[in-house]
Image (cartoon, rainbow, N blue to C red):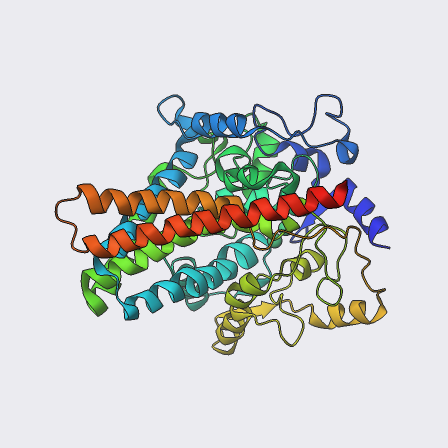
Length: 446
Ligand SMILES: [Zn+2]
Ligand SMILES: [Zn+2]
């Protein structure tokens, strides 16, 4: 049944009542220089095989794509990564100078729950899937702006929305911007390497791609401007809006708790911006079949329901692939959904006029469905994205050590030494766990 559904999806992709040909879906994103598919299978549509680039290939592509000095059309990817690095610096300031038990709780809540849920609410469920509608009139428009700027604004809609539609139309196929078989780094650097729109669209196709954002409060380039900037967004609109949002959030939190709290919030947002890049790889089983009986009910894509992202941000990804246009993704009793609660609150106050809730359809489908059969019995690695955790720990450890040894005015030299030691222990334990898991897997295969 699902296979038939998948085949129907291959010819045409429907998004909010608008149809888009699969030809455009497959060409609307800029293809990385290493290509989506292997040379032998290129152009074979659903039968093509992903080309898995090496780490040096991925990194050199990333360096090329964020270099705004070589090509002004790289400005959006350059913003993405400058913002990421700038906020890591603020995060580091917080961890080095202002950390306290109270602020640590605030940091955790903001980085995980607040940033996660607000981004699910805005960029995923509204900007991409139009799962709910704001009411007409001044109050509805005000609510829309408020939800867009509810937290520290980090992900420009253009970077996420068109590419995410491609992901839903051809999940786990060459051209999927975060194809899990590409590996952790392939997905981690996807915003610069795979999510930029194609710079050679004709006027008609550009209009169709640009119209994917026609409900978002932003300026959209004319075709001539697109030819100049290579994007739908215009830097003179996007960058001042981001600056105003960051300054606004800094002052809001400064008024409540001074510089330490403001630093804590911006740092937490920066940590989320880095961490969210591991989500797409993890939520598609890290390239393996990790569907679990009684948890995942949609076998068409490799997406899985994960407890942590689901609980803190309503991202029950297997449910979401089954019903992408639903404003609710937590369907079972134990699946919390904070963004859906927010939609309901906005609806009670008349700011959201309508929303889709596919829970009844889900319950019916689950009742009628056969239990999922697990295709592989491979033991999954014990935690998500282990290699990324190791690299993260090394970087943080090095930063703490640097601050401890060389920064003359570091206020917490001893604390930094301890933190550097903790990072070192994490790396050792982490590497040990990965090595054991690989060894176990190899011995099973023999
Ligand atoms: Zn997905
Ligand atoms: Zn989605």
